[in-house]
Structure formats: structure tokens, C-alpha cells
Image (cartoon, rainbow, N blue to C red; front, side, top):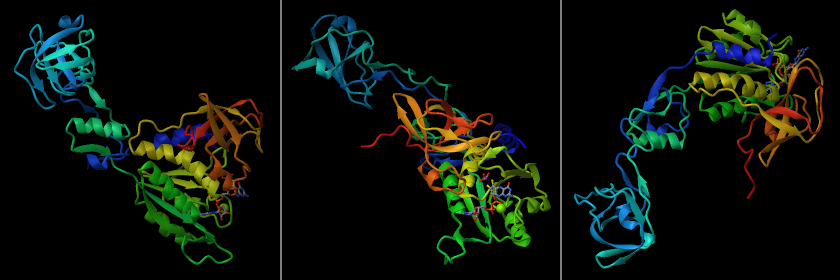
Length: 405
Ligand SMILES: Nc1nc2c(c(=O)[nH]1)N[C@H]1C(S)=C(S)[C@@H](COP(=O)(O)OP(=O)(O)OC[C@H]3O[C@@H](n4cnc5c(N)ncnc54)[C@H](O)[C@@H]3O)O[C@H]1N2
Ligand code: MOO
Ligand SMILES: [Mg+2]
């Protein structure tokens, strides 16, 4: 049975990189850039003013002085005049620096006196001047392949005139729940049934990372139903099943996967929760079979499936950083010899992370997953972790580090 790291590496080594498509830049936020984008010109494109003020010769302004204003340059304008000794040109932010000038005096440091300007302070060479190419040089890579496109990247690409951008295709990920006890959300819920909540949680997890869920519904606990639904799921870019993967008399997932020619990479992983997690490949299609306990489904998605999908989507950063946190409550493992992911709350104070238990760690307890900000990784060789000790955590929440109003 592989360890957690072995399992994650096996998954990452097997999953394919998806193809590319071109999308309108206005639809590209959250997508992953599929090609390096290089600058086709210098940025800024011309040397220009960073302030509303006057373009001057700095050597004229080594003490308070009066200069003759010979022209005006708005943004988008220009001047064919040269700033000669004793003169200045009024200039607005972004307008090109006129010939002869080497500095800008902000309007606040001047007073207008008819056709003269009184420069009240000394001016250093290059003050408030933005030099052509100081931001980006032509030919420089401005956004590398594999970058998540956020507003900053979109702005940069737009400033180079990109209307369409090459991005990786979104994976279509099939989700299949198994179990006779399940009914779909919105259907009549009789006494002996539970709602197929895993499907909704997985849809949410996929949407959160920008993958496209394909909901297959429920396979009943018989081979025929599993064969039909799993065959359908194998048409997607990846398939995630939940439940029916352990050793129960009605756990059919593994045997049906084999029957359908899906090649197992591993059947189990040495982690808790999530021990029965199965990973298999059918040609280029990865199949993740996650245990059915809702907490186990979520933890295994987070730790094993998410990195794989991120890789398929072209992300270059796919593995969660391990953050060290100081324990504010004891954490105890039930069993030595297995890596345990425990649900914890995180407090960030003065740059230091503090972790405390979010409650009952049984895999049947969903409430503590709802409350958790992170998963603490409790290593195989130890079972009690005391207040003040440091543990490694993987953050779950983007709200860590945010403050209340
Ligand atoms: N004798 C053994 N029994 C079990 C073992 C074992 O090693 N030996 N492993 C346990 C562990 S660990 C886990 S985890 C579960 C995994 O079970 P399955 O993946 O086969 O899942 P099921 O048995 O079908 O269901 C488990 C649990 O989850 C509920 N469930 C299932 N699907 C959904 C859904 N879509 N939405 C919400 N809840 C769901 C289901 O009703 C069960 O309560 O096996 C242990 N047993
Ligand atoms: O491994 Mo199971 O997922 O412990 O609950
Ligand atoms: Mg079972």
C-alpha cells in the first residue's frame, strides 16, 4: 500500500495534460495560460510624465526659479517644442516627455504667474519621469505558461492587445455516487434514505478550481447499474466515484472497474481518512474512487484528486504548501503507523499560525469538516501531539488571515 506521498506522486505521474483552446480575454479569468506571452513592445511605450505638472530641465531648477511656459501637453498629446533653458512645458500624467526636459515638477510644487511658472522647490534629474521600457522590455516574458489568470494578468495581457488568449481546456469531470441508500437532493426522502450530498460537495469542489462537473447521478448497488454508469463516466476527461470502494458485500466499484479494463495504479492508500481510495487509469482517463463517508470523500478530493486535476488543467503549482502551525490544543491519533489528516482551526497572529482541534475526528462527523480551516498532517510514527508542538497543516480556507469588520 503506498504512503500518501507515494500515492500523490503516482497520481501526478499518470494524469495527462489537457489540450488548449483560445478564449476571449474577458472570459479568461480563472483559466490557466497555455503559452508564454512575451512583450511585443516596451512598456511604457514612451518616456512620459508620472504627474500633472511641468516638464523642466532639472539644471534650471537647482533653486526656486521662474520659467516661461511655452506649451501644454495633455495625455494623448505631444509637443514639437523643445524645453530650452529658462522654459517649461505644462504636462499631464501619461503625456510624452518633451525634448529638452529631464524632470517633472508636480503642479503642487509650483504657482502659475501669467505665462510664467514659479517652481518653488529644487528638482532632481529624472524626477517623476517614467522611462520607456522601465516596466517591461520588448521580448520579455510577461506572463508564463501555466499561470492562473487573475485580474493582474488579464490587465497585462490586455495592455499588449490580446483579444484572445490561449488557455488549457477545462477538464470535464464525471461524478458518480454509488449506494442504494441514496436519493437525489429534492427527491422524496423516506426514513431509510440519505441525500446524495457527496455529489453536490464534489460539484462544488470542481467548480471552485474551474473544472466542469458532469453529474452522472447514482449507481445502485448492483453490477449492471455500476457498469452502465462507470462506462458513461469513462467518456469524460476524468471520473470520480464516491462510496462502494471498501470491502462490503455491496461494494462493487473495484471489481467493475477491473471488468471494464480500467488498470489499477493502487487500491488503497496508507492514510486516515481515505484508506480505501483507489486510483486507476483507462487509457488517458484517470479514475479516482473515493470512500463514501462524506469527510473521507472531501479529504481525499482535497489531498489526492485536486493536485491531479490542477496538473491536467495546466497549473504549474499543484501541491499545497505545508505550513507549520503551533498547537493550541492536543491532537491524538487513534492508530500509530498511518498518516492522519485531522480537521483543525487556524488562527494567524503576528505572522505565526496556530492550530486547534475542530472537534470529533471520526470520519462520520461532517460538522468538524464544516468548521475546519485546515487539515493537520499527523505523521505515522507518533500518536499524541501536545499543545506547543509544531505540526504541518494544509489550508482549506481562503479566509485564513482575514479579519472581522
Ligand atoms: N470491514 C471493513 N469495513 C470498512 C473498512 C474496512 O477497511 N474494513 N473501511 C472503512 C472505511 S475507512 C471507509 S472510509 C468506508 C468506505 O466505504 P465505501 O467507500 O465502501 O462507502 P460505503 O460503504 O458505500 O459508504 C460509507 C458511508 O458513506 C455514506 N455515503 C455513501 N455515499 C454517500 C453520498 N453520495 N452522500 C452522502 N453519504 C454517502 C454511506 O451511507 C455510508 O454511511 O468503509 C469502512 N468500512
Ligand atoms: O478511511 Mo475511511 O475514509 O477512514 O473513513
Ligand atoms: Mg462500503
